[in-house]
Length: 627
Image (cartoon, rainbow, N blue to C red; front, side, top):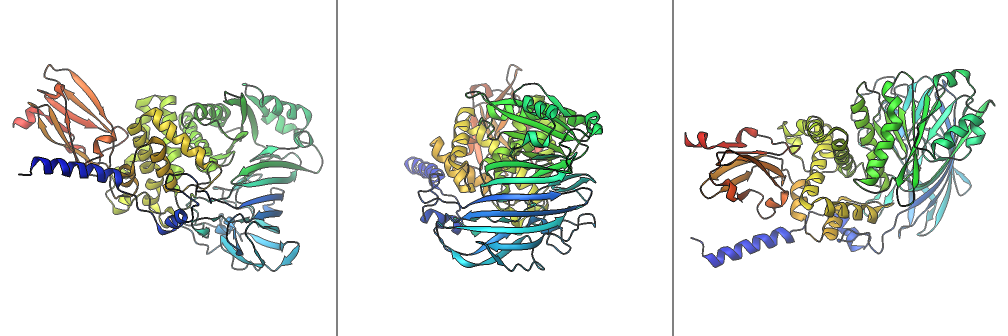
């Protein structure tokens, strides 16, 4: 028998351990703490820095010719303390080359010759660029080292063919293109990893610096261009009635049909020179994308996203008339911007515009969405809301999606669920989340499903990648919301976002920010959800109806919330909600005690969206126990 005082001491040590344990920190992040570029309170360190580029891009497109020609100048500033002897470039569209590294198969309509660099200059001096063996990364040794605090002027001419098969980018049809990742860019050079040289394999997503963009897109007359940023020459490229409608839409709650099939048929929407050059500008943003078509409908409206200043954001949609759901897309977009701005995350939509284009990708870009069409309006809205949620993660903060995909997809998935509760009601939202986000993971016993969420996304594929990035990560975020309560959770989330807006947070910056802002050491929770091989599986293991105690075993190890429903001695059915905090001092077992449990004739546990891997041990009845 353990002595009483010794037992109390042991319990105290166990509690102290749960508070003091630290998280696994990789060596590169440890180095960042030592260099004081990041801090273990979750804030950027006193020596935090990031590099910056100013891009001036000219692009020429003339469908149905699929050739895109471009030229750009880049002023790239080295804000790091390091002397850079090389620059690393991203050439994402080289993923279309035959033989390129990719996680999926590629048919002939996907394949192209990739990006061809026609001219490359450093500080006005032409340098040789042999692109025969370029992959999605290319490192160029500089003629002269780039010193800390110095800038370099770069100039690049290039061309490529738009792929016939449309995915995240490509030809939606013969005269409708979505252009993304279309320009050579300087890769991220950061404070913990250095150059980002991860190969783009078509599955994982992206990691970009916050840059300034001026982009001129030259297209034949009668083509409309939609893009990231603000259109600078509306009156030059649109004829007056349409320019006036667009301007009016930005100041009104109404939805305007800027270009209808009848208008498009008349071919009098744009200025009628041989070509038009649409000029766009966007500052302090992580990427730039555009779409163009000579037959897409164009709708527009706007919504107040900041009630303190009455600032509006434009919502626009571009789509073929046959896509019935897209006739509602501006309405859906306005609702999403309003809800996210005023609920969760509760940060006013940070951009001036959101344009939803009918494509095939279900993919997000700054101020742009490329979505497929579906016959189900609720599902089309659901997809649009998920992609718009990405405005905050990764675009409000420059998240490394390639390595830490759960930091953006997980949050977009959590936000998708919360707005769905508002849209469809809690019961339907829970059922949809279980079906689309949890079921595949929790009912698959294969070992890749149990890989820790913190596992770098760039080395994963298949189910291990998808579930770690989406459903599992979202459940963790929703579980910590349940643990903290809505008010403290909102304070922590907004505080984290404010600290890292316009910067490059890592997972540890997120974890430690929440610890710091809430005043709670949540490492026990983060470790179990994001660093372990745990899953959700609970069991009712022991009932003492006389004492009013219920013992719950946590067989899977995840500290998830759950409801316990019981039938009282008088026959009344009641439900009690248990937050994840019950697992703080013992992840394996929790004993619940309540007066109303005394004499109860049945108990059951249900996690809702926190689905249980084995529900056979989730119920208990007095009748069954007596047999």
